[in-house]
Structures are given as structure tokens and as C-alpha cells.
Image (cartoon, chains in turn green, purple):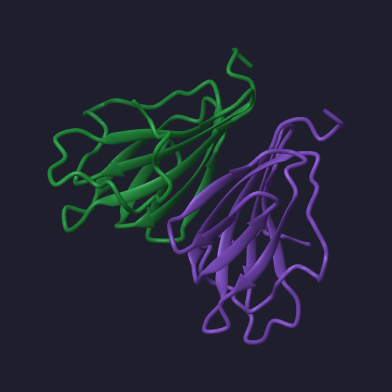
Length: 114
Length: 114
């Protein structure tokens, strides 16, 4: 995680190659954290499910992705957003290899167990 | 203010004409509120300054705008974001007449006096 103290534009500072997902924290406050996440063909590891203590409101701004929930699949194109409640298990099943996918994620709520 | 319970994409549901700024609440939680704001040439009323109880992290995703603070002017193009602390007085001095300007605003922190 890199602190984005210098970053002032979400669509700049994209690395030429991206061996791993790039997560940049844009804001960190008491009950909210805003991250830019850049994926380029990355997916969650096989069998892995996110199970987060905080809620996550997330929007795709560039690229395309597919999120798998236990009960549904959500295709995401630029502008699409979804609100993922704490402990709602999910994984990123696909991001387009054609270009970087840029997510903006707002984590919110108590970080302690709920 | 319209509750965006049905909205799932930030760039759709844009009205043909926009007599006033259009504010849609996308998320409302204990310490955070996420809004889509659509301006089309709109500016803050003459002499008006926002003086908000909550902090506001805001990004321009389409269009262009200029925010005036007491000590500086910030030009904003797509991807540019700024963190406006509570009670940091500011106004929107200009938004482009060429197209709608789409803002994503995250209000956070205690709404009570700080």
C-alpha cells in the first residue's frame, strides 16, 4: 500500500507494467478509507473469498471486471458501482486484460467485528 | 435530493436539461454519505461560500470545474480530486458549459459541530 499524498489525479501515475494489483490509499479517516485499486487482468487467487470487517462501496471507472458473490455475479463496466456489506463474501473473478481496470473503493463502518 | 436506490451506474440517468444541479445520494451510512452531483454550467450563487460540518472528498469524473478556496483556486479535470476539510470555506466558481460535469463526493466525519 502506497500513501497517495502526492497524487491529485486518479488516472495518472499508472505504472507501465503491473505484476500485482496496485492499491493506493487516497484518504484515511476515522470511519472511512478511500483507495484507488488498479488491476490489469488480475483476479482473486483460486478459491479465495474476501470476508471484510468493513463495508465497501466500489465503482469501476476504467476497464471492466466481474465480481462473484455467493448468490450472484456482477459484471462491471465504467460507472458501475456496488455496495458490498461487511462479511459479504466475494471475489474478483475477472478483470479485462485489454487495459488497466481502475476501481475507486470507499471502505466505511466500524473496523471491529460487527 | 433523489435517493439512488435504482441507480447502478454513475454515468447514466443524466437528464436532457438541467435547470439546477442534480444531487443523487448513492449511499447513506452512519459516518459517510456518497453523492453524485451533476452540474452543467452551474456555479455557486454570487458571494455564497460552502461552510460544511462534514469533510468532503470530491472527484471530478466528467467535465471540468474550478473551486475557489479562501487561499487558492483549484482547477479540476476528470480524475482530479480534492479533500475539503469541514468548515473550509469554498465555492464552485465555474463548471464547463460544454458538457455536464459529474462529481463524486464522499462526505465523512461527525455531522455535529467539531
